[in-house]
Image (cartoon, rainbow, N blue to C red; front, side, top):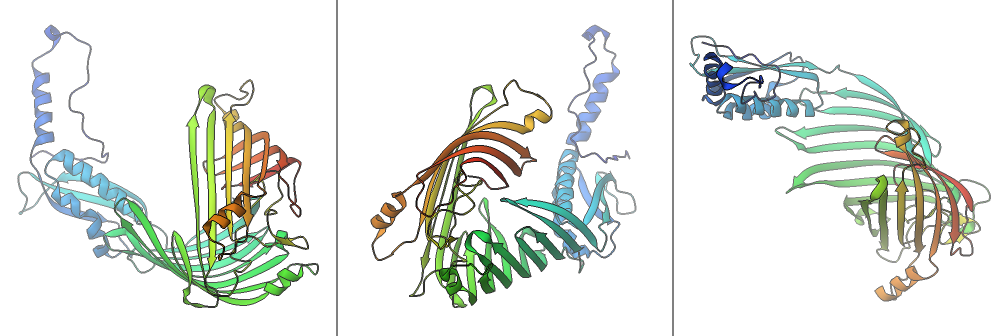
Amino acid sequence: MGTVHARSLDPLPMQGPELGVQADDMDLGEPEQEEKQEVLENKDVVVQHVHIDGLGRTKEDILTYEVADVFRAKNLIDVMKKSHEARQKLLRLGIFRHVEVVIDTTEGADALPNGLDVTFEVKELRRMTGSYNTMVGNNEGSMVLGLKLPNVFGRAEKLTFQFSYGTKETSYGLSFFKPQPGHFERNFSINLYKVTGQFPWSSLRETDRGVSTEFSFPIWRTNHTLKWEGVWRELGCLARTASFSVREESGHSLKNSLSNTVELAGYTGGDVSFLKEDFEIQLNKTLFWDSVLSTSLWGGMLLPLGDKPSSIADRFYLGGPTSVRGYSMYSIGPQSEGDYLGGEAFWAGGLHLYTPLPFRPGRGGFGELFRTHFFLNAGNLCNLNYGEGPRAHLSKLAECIRWSYGAGIVLRLGNIARLELNYCIPMGVQSGDRICDGVQFGAGIRFL
């Protein structure tokens, strides 16, 4: 019986290569070879055994679900396709360094004439791995150290410890991740953490100690994460010059929240109670000469539940090189003695035109990472009196709109972060706003 031995899972060609010869020059052996190949591809086969070689601490039962579809293959092409899909599922578990596939004919007393064996040769990850990274956020940077124990109990569980030290925030946390066997997209995780952050625009220091649980699951074509979080928050003054409004909000509070796109806090306990929702929309259109026109819209609202006002730690903030340019970081809206207190509702919109650099220096290479940037931004942020009705709320957001325009240079860092150097002209400035009239630098991953 013949042998099929394959490490590449690409489909076999349906016909031989074109040799550039006339029909009269072809010998009689080639059609027979093509006919044999076609028979081999379409011949009914039975996958009798699936082997996984190289397992150490991994339990076989967790892998059975991932390779089960291979047994349903009906011909060689189907076997190769389903083996490739199973290989991707095994790699998705995050417990193997690499996975190779070998397809061979079945041997032994129980071998069928058309029987095949599929073997997955795997190499497990080490019991412990470490990592060191630097991260860039919205006008801040941090160093991140991580320690990971993959496949800790043999069924794709993962235990992770992470420490982060940044320009405005320091944190450490411990998390445990557990997927559902056969349904990796359904998984559960629990996290313990402590985060200390500084917010100089509000003269505020915040320390959070919390625990959270997450359950991720698919619904139709979307993936959802249902999250419960309990946080003990401690607010304090960052400087002796902090305003009375900030000092008044200093102290301890408990926040329990349940979220899945919309965050609902208060009904699960604690002394902080509110409903909070926000959204982001962005549209991009490619124009002539490699230019791109981009429009974006942000918005959000926070509704306190009960008689207690919202906390400074939960409100929205607006302004800075990553949102409404031409204004200092988070320096739009209510403030007290120079400390910005945030708002319960906001909106922001932007219109941007990105074009290649003049004369296209470095075309096809490093120069392609740079773009000329023209922008028009606008937005507003305020607190709301919920007894006045929706029309009054919209009227407040439409009053005293801050806006700006300008131009600059954008540098793309991978497909995630970017740097901007813009010349900004702020308009609609209100009393108490802090502006950055002229050159403004921004770095981050989330831009208006």
